[in-house]
Amino acid sequence: MRTTTSQFRLAARPEGLPKPGDWEYVQEELPELAAGEFLVGVSHISLDPAMRGWMNDVRSYIPPVGIGEVMRAAAIGEVLGSEHPSFVVGDHVSGAFGVQSHAISDGKGVIKVDPGLASLPVYLGVLGLTGMTAYFGLLDVGKPEAGQTVVVSGAAGAVGGVAGQIAKIKGCRVVGIAGGADKCRHVVEDLGFDACIDYKGEDVGAGLREHCPDRIDVYFDNVGGDILDAALGRLAMHARVVICGAISQYNATDKVKGPSNYLSLLVSRSSMTGMVVFDYADRYGEAAVQMAGWMADGRLHSQVDIVPGLETFPDTLLKLFRGENVGKLVLQV
Image 1 (cartoon, rainbow, N blue to C red):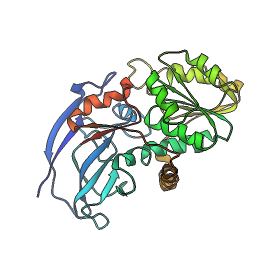
Image 2 (tube, rainbow, N blue to C red; image 1 turned 45 degrees about the horizontal axis):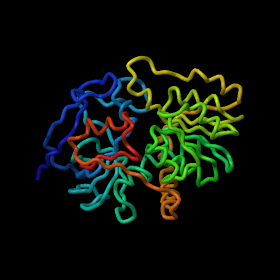
Image 3 (tube, rainbow, N blue to C red; image 1 turned 90 degrees about the vertical axis):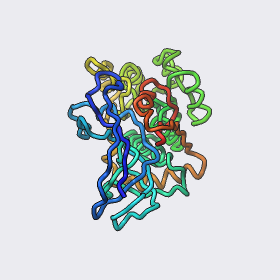
């Protein structure tokens, strides 16, 4: 039996924020399954700031999405039909299935997930690439030590919220930076940060001086721009700056703004290192086991913002860049 998939394809390279005309919404009949393939009915799609970079035809850590191709995205779904020896009907799986309702896969990069252990959206958040990014970015690159001060920008976001919680688990003082009083309240009261600076309502530099009297040992950056500069000006000796993302710059129509305060790295003998989660693929299992244990202990909390309707994708994606989501943003198909 043939299956029709609904999908969003990239129609044009966006300039600034993606516009409705940058997308093409189509319905396409999928071919019959070949040997070694299986059909996935997609239930949830991960929406991430990195998707904006994948739309640009520039050199990066991963090839750009081609014009006319289904928009790349991690997703969760159920196997509906299979000609693959390792996947059977009823299996729940996670993989790069894209922004569409159904996908055919050969199993490469696909893992099975257990909905009995955690809800499916959690496998796109804390137990997915989001959690892996926070885990390896903080622990392998940031190398925090108990008693040190860790500052996390984008603290109410998917990666930042997890990174800060892990820093608390490791015995650090943790200060978040987020936009708005409600988000800052969530970061402190729900996620357990020691303090949170509202970049929309207060001076970030002054906030860092107040909440980081011993300066910053680890800065986990998700936003770039002026906030990165403010953090660089408050580094402790031998601090580590983790460059995870720069959401403030992703939709810039001019040149990306680089750090003007970079000489602070020299003065404090600090390091600034970029990290890409795919480099740790062979260790995802290690991180998942550790974080699942923390979740079971009640020390690590999952925050998922679910928006229903595949057809809402173009506008729902913009929630990331309007700062409207709290935690992991997921599209429910």
